[in-house]
Image (cartoon, rainbow, N blue to C red; front, side, top):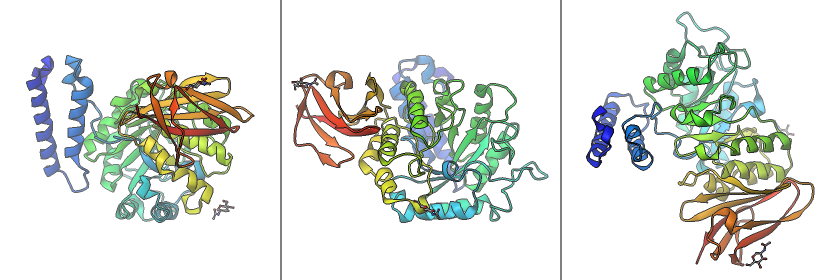
Length: 429
Ligand SMILES: *[C@@H]1O[C@H](CO)[C@@H](O)[C@H](O)[C@H]1NC(C)=O
Ligand SMILES: *[C@@H]1O[C@H](CO)[C@@H](O)[C@H](O)[C@H]1NC(C)=O
């Protein structure tokens, strides 16, 4: 591939063939736990074609992270926001059961992610992480088998430091290869990799070590960089992870939620299929916000192409919570194949207009009222990337209604305090 620096058509074809050959040989030599490596590499080839072609040097360079995952933002659940450290294998299994019985797994919520506090404080005699005997007596492999049998995936948590943030278990710093091997052997599909209690070296040094270890471990594992946005991981994360936190931890309040949304929006240009900005996990259903506020939370996360990782107790959700997180039309915006993160295209005081393109020449628009009074908000075609004279059909994603009126030049809706309206606009002429 070193000969390919000229990036000619023939040369690209050669890269393509080489990748296909290496993928088929790796699939025949790897165990049945592996995903679909063929798809992986075809994906990365199309990426080379579409995005790397202009730069000759780049077109020959393989991405460190070529795991083929995260074509759309990940969806699922994580234990932290609701349970913190108080987790055990029963909760994880019951959550997997609930994701299936509620129908949420069919909507795409397939990752079941264990956060901090799942392991013993000490490694075993050989230096391996040991699942905590009092809370995970059956071990992580058994849990992965259970979750996989339901058509779901299992995520786990570690830390690019000596201890995790809870300090109740070791981190993976200095043990990256060994831990990645453990995760792969257990059947893990997703790793959230935190940043606590490290040695003071840069995340740009510590995180790629785990990326390499995961690639070497031979199982496609979604790599979620939980670096808190300190060193602007959006600018380097795509080569290292499938998502990167752009913010510190969220809490279950309106102010915390909108501030994560703001910090994350700054990096919109860096999100794309394979790697996403992550403003932290969802708080919907945990009780700290109103229904309208949680609707804003879910809408911003969806239009921002953020991971949709539920953070409530899915075994015990109210109808109100289900109405929000099971909105197929809003989920479809998040999972749209174009994979472009929306931006705030206009702000006027407490009023915000967010917009981003979708496949099929459509545009997703979100009108957010952060102020204390009900007020009309107008989205101008000029701001949201629709030609000025276009006649537009609008679908209201929370009312599940296509509006009878067609719109030219702008669309106005009256929005309650701490509430939003969300539309898909499609020019019809
Ligand atoms: C279920 O949720 C309700 C509130 O929605 C709460 O009062 C109750 O304690 C929860 N039950 C369990 C077992 O967590
Ligand atoms: C919206 O567009 C219409 C023309 O279609 C125009 O009459 C109206 O003034 C515009 N409203 C705003 C608030 O820009």
